[in-house]
Amino acid sequence: VTTVLFVAVCLLAIVVFILFGALIEMYQQLTQVRDHLDLVDSPSPVGLGKLAGAAPSSVGLPSELDAAKHNVVLLLSNKCQTCFNLAQELSGGTMPAGLWVLVVPIFGGNADDFLEQYQLRGERVLVDQDQRIAERLALDTTPAALIIRDGTLDRAQTVPTVRQLRAILPSPAAAHQVTDPTSRKAPSLVSSVQAN
Amino acid sequence: VVDVAVALVGAGATVGLAGTFLWSSLSKALVVPGFRQTLHQLGLPSGLARHVALAVVLAEFVTAGGLLIATSSWWPRAAVVILAVSFGSAAGWTIATRRRVACRCFGSTSRQLGTRHLALTPVWIGLAVIAQIVPPTWNVVSGLAILAGLLLALIAIQQLHLFPLMRTLRGDRIALAPDYAGLHTKTGGVQS
Image 1 (cartoon, helix red, strand yellow):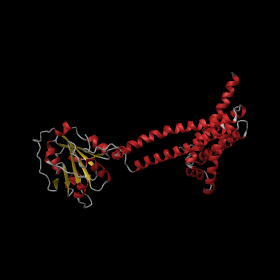
Image 2 (cartoon, chains in turn brown, yellow; image 1 turned 135 degrees about the horizontal axis):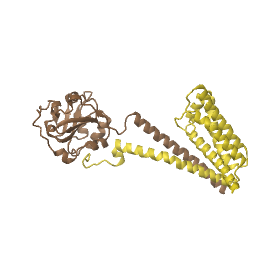
Image 3 (tube, helix red, strand yellow; image 1 turned 60 degrees about the horizontal axis):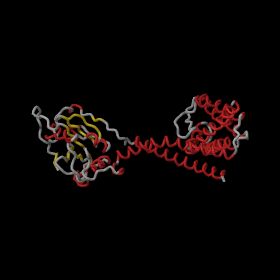
């Protein structure tokens, strides 16, 4: 009986080893696939060029941002899956303090369906219908975030995940602080920007 | 005391060899197509490589089991020498021909066959000689118990690879789709 039991344990152990081995193989493949598809949770900086330090209104963003101490403009397109994930996170609720959303409809698409689908509403939800802002910023990557500090375009980066979005949001106190924009001329909004 | 030490050395050599061949055999069993590719790169025709790959996996497992269960037989130690010489010859051939061949000695590793494998050949042969000179004296049931213990130990070692991968994937999953991890806040979107 003891011999039979040990043989049974050995056979079961072999099966378990192979099953765990298959699981490890599958996990390694998933990691490889995610690495290959660049789905890892790491933001990449996006160059602003000469626009760094410029007033947000100079590229067509609302002039309120020229007085913002620390705000973030999230650029979403109506086509990318990560944009959908981020929009879903913002869906239907109050926009976090200091966060603006700029929807950039690409491929001739209409932003209304996107806004309706994810119930993105409010004064801080904008549409770059003619892509003028995105073109001025030379941003061809979405989702991306523009970080506004002391009333100027500080930097830009990609936003690959909701976690990264959370990480770049300003604190409520900083979001509501204003800076002195008097030293800067604030151009009016471009016609293509509509407040929803 | 000397007799006990000698017996322990013999038993250690046997268990060490058995554990190594068990690990090698079961790891290769998970990547038989890859190991077949290794054999093909070593010059075997593709059709033959498939059969040889399965034969090597089986031979390693039988050798490991034989070392622990058939302690009084000479054939498991002879099998160790044959397998060691075969692996060493393959490594020597890749060195001589300057070919780069993935070893897959322990599954899907990226290590290439080379000097390390050639240098280990006398070690395996030496352990087999020690095990032959001082064979263990345990019975079949004890041998099976040691085999079961080794298999359970290998499963435990597997967990060391598994858990870090699980943590990484879970972190990615939460980052990419918080809904699935139950972290989505329905009350008001992203919380700062």
